Length: 98
Image (cartoon, rainbow, N blue to C red; front, side):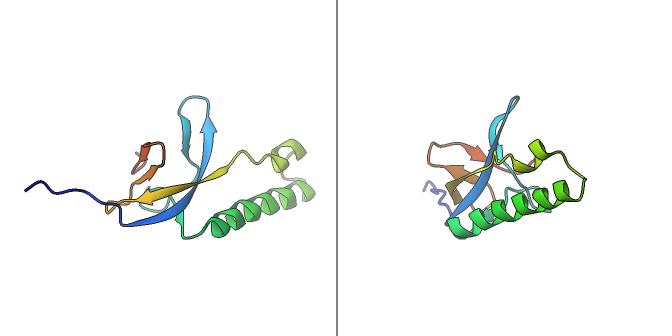
């Protein structure tokens, strides 16, 4: 019998676009797997927290203004698979970062 692989849960992930790789997960955990969030609000708060940290670095003279206000990250719903990889609605799969 053929085993059908099923995702373990639905979640949200934060993505960014790069020149070389295109769309990729913005953050990875200690196992080099994409970081996922249980809710869209949780992911939004993570982006907001990062922006606030960058603004504080600007105020402290540690970062240029243009660097502190850019929010190139975006959130997408994903399926999380048993091995920790994620897939988007478009069928893109992201696993362990090498």
